[in-house]
Image 1 (spheres, rainbow, N blue to C red):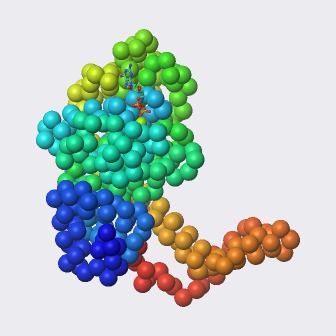
Image 2: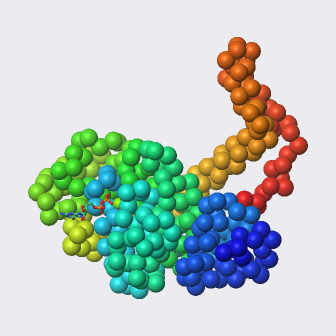
Image 3: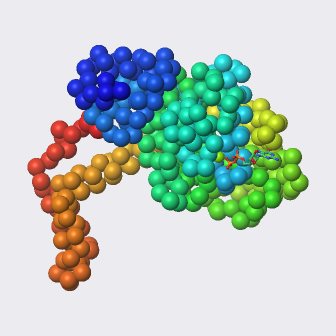
Length: 339
Ligand SMILES: Nc1nc2c(ncn2[C@@H]2O[C@H](COP(=O)(O)OP(=O)(O)O)[C@@H](O)[C@H]2O)c(=O)[nH]1
Ligand SMILES: [Mg+2]
């Protein structure tokens, strides 16, 4: 284990590591993800190698929806569908209740037996950011590692609470919104934002009464608010437990990819994705730097006391902190490229 954590790892060791990732070595993949997640010193040079070797043509599909809609079951069946074509598949579950949960890649608590014995399926479950869920910031990097591991498809499961669907849309090439009849998610009650990010609708649990009604309402809603990019989101009924409709769902994903490639939609999305990622990292890096350089050793409390005591106000305090941080000898130029 210690060899993976050695900060003075040579370029040769790193290349060897990256090659093992490409070969689908689970241990190497798991360690790479852990190193990147925890910002270990060798993570940035390793990430650079992995990013270069990531097959950028991988399809990243986000699967989102309310808890219990059948996302995990659907992801399992979709993965099997891609596997039947011999494609290597990655699964990222950002869901505390996910049966994929088990910590490491291929944790033994995974209930998806069909997948966990398959050497060409890589599963990573991730903690959500806060109590309200939310996409773990490292999810982007995990996708890159899985792409570098040769995954032609990466499926990301996220619970649909609030902001997540929008975030997963920033990470994925395609977003599938999973609905189920009788779950209270009547079409009228959808938040506008959620409707807009769905490229494909899966009405799961189509074996239950009410699926047809959900589909009708959805289609009615879609017909009155067509998308400006010209894509008409398909609506697919599925029964995830039996696999019914999963081939159609996969076809819808293939069609969307073809549409995105024939128009400039895919490229536009990818630009948005990397822009969001760059800005998020910048925000995080700058904030950490200000915390470290300006606000260590209880100095936050001193600012709080000043505000509390009326000697300063929050806006002026932050202005001063930022001024001090930006006039400090820049650490930034030398920091580039480090974790
Ligand atoms: N009847 C029926 N049950 C389903 C279907 N898909 C999933 N389920 C069940 O619904 C429950 C929740 O599924 P799960 O995949 O964990 O949902 P998630 O919370 O969205 O990931 C499980 O008991 C599944 O077996 C379906 O198409 N029909
Ligand atoms: Mg789940």
